[in-house]
Image (cartoon, rainbow, N blue to C red; front, side):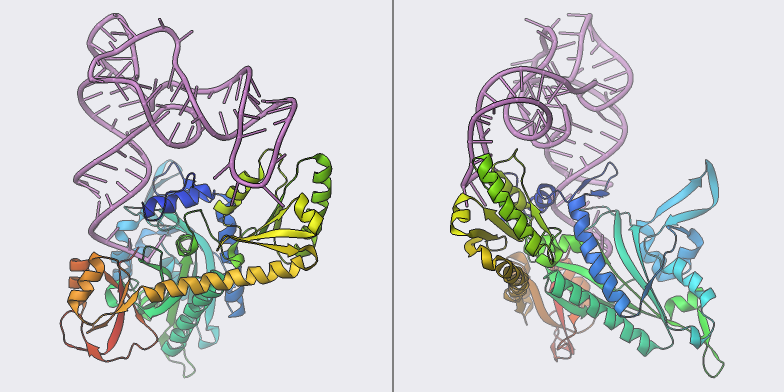
Amino acid sequence: MKGITKRKDDYSKWYNDIISQADMAEHSPVKGCMVIKPYGYAIWENIRNILDKMFKETGHENLYFPLFIPESFIRKEADHVEGFAPHLAVVTHGGGKKLEENLIVRPTSEAIICSTYAKWVKSYRDLPLLYNQWANVVRWEMRTRLFLRTTEFLWQEGHTVHGSCEEAEEETLKMLEVYRSCAEDYMAISVIKGLKSESEKFAGALRTYSIEAMMQDKKALQSGTSHNLGQNFAKVFNIQYQNKQGHLEYAWQTSWGVSTRLIGALIMSHSDDMGLVLPPKMAPIHIVIIPIYKTLEELSDIMEVCRKIKEDIGIKYIVKIDDRDTEKPGAKFFEWEKKGVPIRVEVGPKDLKAKEAVLVRRDLNTKSRVSLETLTVSIEELLMDIQKTLLEKHRKFREENTFSIDNYGDFKNLYEGEEGFALCSWCGNPECEAKIQEETKATIRALPMDGREEAGVCIYCGKTSKVKAIFAKAY
RNA sequence: CGGGGCGUAGCUCAGCUUGGCUAGAGCACAUGGUUUGGGACCAUGGGGUCGGAGGUUCAAAUCCUCUCGCCCCGACCA
C-alpha cells in the first residue's frame, strides 16, 4: 500500500504512518507535543463522551482546577515529588518579572486539589466528594510518541474523598470497572484488570490498579489507572473531617485517569497494513457512501439513492456521502480505508439496475451485495458484527500470546524471541522483579484480579509464592 | 544523556564527494478539458531567505566552524 509501512517491516514506522495517513495528528514545533487534528480529536471526543456519561451515572460531577500549581504544594508529598520531579515543567517568570515562587505546570492535580479539598471537607456529612476534571497535563519525557507518550496530553482525572478505606477501595475498583467497560464495550480493546506491583504503582498511592492491553507487537500498554490513595495525601494536605462521634479523622481518597494514550491503544489494537481500523462505537464516521457514475444523468439518479440511504441510516449513525468529483472511486476507497471507516457503501449504475448496493466492511475487507430494501437493517447488523468481531479478535490475539510459564529458562527464551504476556508465580519480592527486568526487559504489568491467589513457586527465586503476575515488555 | 539518521517547495527526496550559468524531480495545490466499479490523463500555472549564524572564496545548497531542531533505537516514564 502506498504510504503505509508494513507492521512486520517496521512497527514504529507503521504506527506513525497510520496516524499521518488517517490525518489524526502531527508533530508540533515543540518537541514531544502534538497537534491533534479533527479526525483524531473526534475519536477523543467519542472516548470523552462515553466516559463522561459513565462518570455521571456513577455519581460524579465535573469541575476544573488551574493549570499552575505552586512549587511548594508539589513538594509536600515526598513520594509524589520523587515520582514527578524529573518530569516537571517549571514557570519561573510571569509578566516579565521573575516570580517569587515558581509555578509548576500540572503533571497531575493531586497537590492542588487536595489542598483545596482540605478547605471543603469538615464533616462526615461533606463526604463523599466525587469529582472529575477534564484537562491537559504536562510531563517532560525523554522519548515521546504521538498519543502514546507526549509531553502535553489530554486526560481526565477523578479525585474523590471518602469516609473509610473500604469506601475508597470500592470507588477505586468501581472506576477501574468503568475503564474496563469503556475499553472493551466501546473501544473493542480486551484488557486485563490488575493490581500494580509496589515498584509500578503511582507515587503516593496505597494501591494502584490498571487495565492492561496487548498491542499487536505483543507489548503491554497500560491503558488506564485507578489509585486508592489511602490517607497519604490527606495527611500531607490535612484533609480531616469530624466523624459521627465528633472525632477528627483523616479522609480516604482515590484518583483515577485515562488519557489520549487510549487513542494509541485503539490504533495498535485493530489497525492493519492498509490503515486505521476503528470499531463502530469509536468511529467519527460510521458509513461512507461512494457514488459511482459515468454521466451526469447517472449521477443524479445515483445521488438520489445515496441521499435516501443517508436519510434512513442517518437517524442512528453518522453517514458521509463522498460526492467529490475530483477523485476517482478507487482513490476514495483507499482514503476512507486509511481512515478506518467501518462500512463503505458503493452505489453505481449496476446496483441501481439490480436495486442493490455493495457493502464493504473495513475490518475483514469483504464485499457483499445487499438489496436496497433491507439495506438499513443489513448495515446495522454489520456494524454490530464489526464491533463484536474486533473485540473477539483482540481478545483472541492476547490469549494466544499469553503463556503460563513456570521456569525461568522458558521465560528468558520468550523475551528473546516472539514475546508476549507471561503468566508466572511471583514471590512478591521487588528484588526478583528488578532482576527479571534487568535480564529480560520484561516487567510486571499487573497482578491479575481473577485467580491471583494461586499458590506456586516464584519464577525467579523459587521460593513459595501466593500470586500470579503478568509479565511483559511495556510501552 | 548515549548511539544512529536527517534538515533543500505543503510532502517525499535528488543535487553536495569534485564550489560555477536562472536550484531540480515526483506527489500535492490552482485553472481548463477529457475521465470515473480499486490510487486517472493532458495542458497551463503558483509556490524556495537550500534549518540558522559566522567563515573561506571572484563565486557556497555544496567546503570549514559553531549552533538550533526533528525522527528512530536505548536508559526513564501513563
